[in-house]
Amino acid sequence: MRKPNKLAKEIAEVVRIGEMPPRQYLLLNPEAKLMLQAVQALIAGTPSGAGLQVERERYNY
Ligand code: HEM
Image (cartoon, rainbow, N blue to C red; front, side):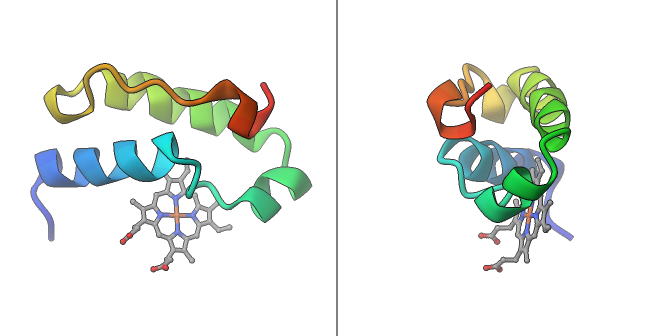
């Protein structure tokens, strides 16, 4: 199991660059953008994810 801080950093990275959630999944499940916003809010509050800004145009919301 990875340490919470490392995991938060990795999650912040995959979300920020648009690797996760998978694009295909978002196309089929538009409501998943809410999940994305929740993850963004959560990660932004952790030291390793501070300042995380998801590029809105990547997700079109
Ligand atoms: C906001 C939602 C999501 C977050 C934060 C997230 C985060 C992550 C992270 C941190 C990894 C590990 C990446 C790595 O080891 O390099 C991962 C891998 C993966 N995720 Fe997600 N994920 C999300 C949604 C999803 C969804 C909805 C699916 C499927 C429909 C999915 C499928 C996968 C798969 C298949 C992998 C393994 C990919 C690989 O190892 O190349 N994820 N995800």
